[in-house]
Length: 67
Image (cartoon, rainbow, N blue to C red):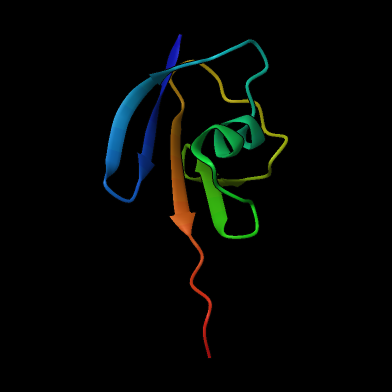
């Protein structure tokens, strides 16, 4: 079971590491924070607790701070 991940220069198919693997698990694995990254699952905004399913398209978008 796998999903597709798109983030910056990354565009790859990844295996689901465990059952009930969440956006939060993925962020932790990549060393990212939900305070600096927004996740989309199959084109829809996803919260940290969202479970990633087989075949999902996950896109992580870096939040830009500034003023």
